[in-house]
Image 1 (cartoon, helix red, strand yellow):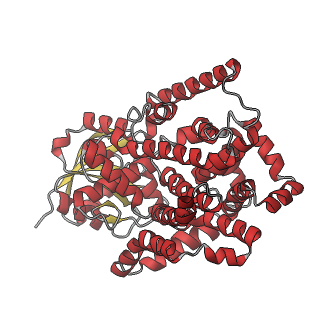
Image 2: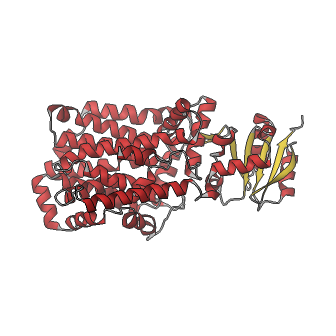
Length: 483
């Protein structure tokens, strides 16, 4: 019941926030409107292969069943949050057998995980799929029944296949922890035994089928995946996400120091254990699950710190081993039946829900796509245009993706285009969109001279009529391609 309350409260009260929420929902809507569920795209003219499609498929399925609204867009994330709690309960039977519910309680009420569950991103689903994979490994390694021992590895490979379809290579980072733990406790022969033919076949079928199809269909896509999405993110600052020697501290330390509230005491004890060599030696001797949990956190975290692309949400899956470690440390001392403990926990939950409610009714106005849609609708009758085209002054095309309010598509029911002002074919892109969609609303970045923008359209035979202002950006109705 607590999970339902925390997961579903205010799910539809807050509009989609840019950039990520609008971007993911916009791609899902483009899939629904075009019928092309194979190739993710922001608009009919802009493919987007930066992420595998599982996130978009899940959102599209929810929108199809429950309607095109914010609540439906976020529903899969509430379900993923609840499913993650269930997996933590299952893993808690090994990590904290006296209180198997404690890891789920810690995860559900931690500051970072609670608010992250309300954000449309790949990371919430990645946490679930990685959790499924590790739950399968734990069941196979510390089985309670013959079925768990027999089928646990199949579940593990299924989970990793889904994780790979959610975020690509980062979804396999816990597999490194699995391999290292297995080699420490059983040698490399045991590592080879993890490669069960049926399990690997499940992983390849689930995780690689889409990649194989799109790589064969779209020329140059393999190079894009390897150069942009692997090499570029790990070794370069091209994505401008807290790169540099100390970028990891900026991105991750606040999450670990503040996002683990209010469970600092249990995590401090777990950290002391992880920092004690004798404890590691004992865990290794006993093939302890605590050794695996420590590796599950430490290895991916080290890789995230070394990578040059870092965002706070990258750490969300690592709150699974943190919750399990804290629970294993606290299971002998945490007593929820004590009135003081229960009262403080209830007060904390009220504070979490109140903060979530405040954010839903006021905070984040500048990035709220629903509010932006209302403002645009008040300025221009939506019946006057069939698409929205953002002409952006930006440093590069990636910045255009970040600045464009893709989530307007959910609220205005119109395709959204993002065009880079400095692109050599900016005019051709706009005119192609007008030719495809008909009369379109052009939202001109305030830093672009309107006379130059109109000249750009005139060059390809389109006309633009000023119709107002929106947040100091000029609005034009663009139409009328000449024969």
